[in-house]
Image 1 (spheres, helix red, strand yellow):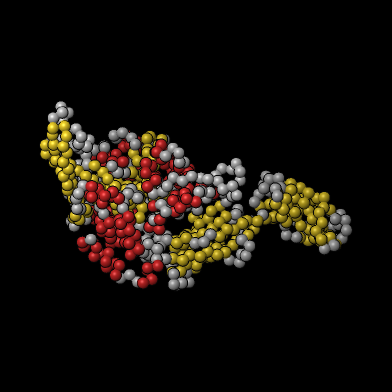
Image 2: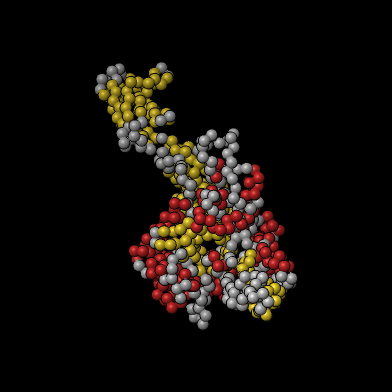
Length: 618
């Protein structure tokens, strides 16, 4: 989206049918998470407040940095955060798109967030957003001049550089993916360039998709509408939906800005449905998101007379339409002394009004003018009818430009439909078989077991389950295995570990069932000592014990202990592990009999022992 975007009928019958047929148990369900939207750098406060980090002396070490993770905030600021738009509506959403970045060159992606919010670090904002559990998929816009980006994409090496820059941005910030809003192709370059640009755009999307998917990141694109190429009106074909469909994870369609230069609906519903139908004919409906405008427009339609100098600036018939937030629409109608009507055909609210201005001309003469204006915007009924299209076609959801600009009744409309089409809740539990102390020796096999059921405890069979792991010092989860539940709704996955890690299982959401994430289980890895030693020797001969410490550690101290009179006693036989974690210890025994030994290893503050072993001395 460019910043310029800021500036109940037959569909209701669909909702009514859904609501009436709901089972009683559905009332307890969470709403379907089908809302997403953009958070521009200039209006972060719309969805979450700027809050101060204040150390709690009892909880924070003096002089230590205070981080978002520490949760050290003033109580009144936490109350503001918990009552903010993003936190109160997080159950409706899976992801948000911070509208914060601009591509300026193949190697430069400008951070607009920092420019717009110099006193509130981006890391803090991201941390607070992550606390909601939402995926963060920032948007990058095209900040180059006419035909520049098209030129970049025409060159293989430059495409590769841009891909690397975007992937680097995603990985360095721990984003869940990226959303591309490259509108220059559509609105700046001119449609005569589309045939040449489209193939290069497709190559770029495929290359970026490959690299992002290697790290299990999401690729989203935001584009204007398109229609079936076989029809007379084709739309913005430069974005080649059919050719990129297999490479992208989200298509967010800008089903707004239908009327810009002349008065008319922001995004008439028939036009909106037409582009949605084309999109789902060439890609899974779950990838497709309908765009919802949280703004309206106010156009000048005529001016009678000569306006005085006191008239509002831009009081000319050629002036661009004024833009206002939907949340201001009701107040605006009162100020304009107008009564909005709902246009059934477009599924939008509209009204016209006249303002008269009396005053003086620039030459001091008395004058008067009457300015006629027309307003269009979407309201709660508009949102209901568009969300019913999400239900009708089983779309991925809706994308709001921008989050928080809609009024409370429209947000409620979103929630009502999301509740009406709520998927079944999936209960997911992870356990570790035969493990009471959450510890395992290095390299040993243990079993992760998962159990998945519906809320009534009915097992879910034939369900694909992802096993995810997060190692120590990692913040992101990594998929390590995939399994399918048996008829009892269970999975069992063998795992070996080289280092301590935390595990969970996850299932993707479908139209019928909600996404599920299990409890987390941590498994700590204990050091393991592998030994090689003789089973018997002649008295007086050298006993050579070879060993390897796992994980392989350099410089660990090793010591032989003997069992003497029922107690372990240290000996003077010591050594140090080499770079491969290996060591050799040599001893001799002059007396015949059976000697029982073990190896003590000390690394840092940790002390641990090998299994005991016995050698027969002949």
